[in-house]
View 1 (cartoon, helix red, strand yellow):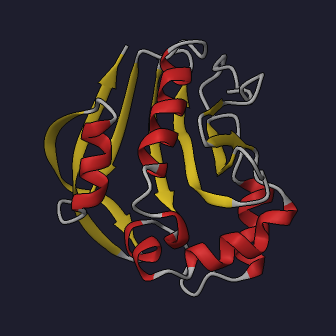
View 2 (view 1 turned 90 degrees about the horizontal axis):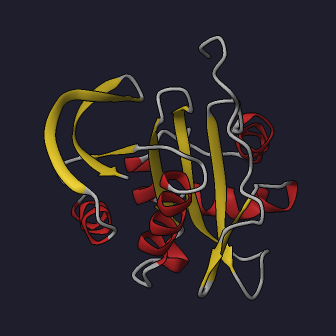
Length: 181
């Protein structure tokens, strides 16, 4: 963390729109996290450990939030115990007014617009009340679904970043998408 870089705080009031809301992860989410992260697509396109255990979920819940990270559970607005996915800010710099953003959708909630709604909701708050001016997200070139989500949420496709991410000891190319205030 940079000296003088303030920590990102939880949105107040919590973010909600239509059928979803975003909230902090809690102990009650361990089972849903394990089930979602055991999914081959979730494991393939994220940095979750394989296999993903209840201990991994508890570690994520305990240590996922930091001064420069804001991981949020995407849940049903009607039942906040129903985890639909995740969205979060990471590498947040309030002094530089920028962040990276990421998301995944639980297999039981795919193809329902959950990722796009969650991405739009957190992006709007980050570029509005939080005061950021730039959000970047990175998608592997073959992850067509995630690229469509980014574009539908208003993100502009940028350059291919060679060896842009490392997952499980291997480097992958990624496409950068950007949303500006």
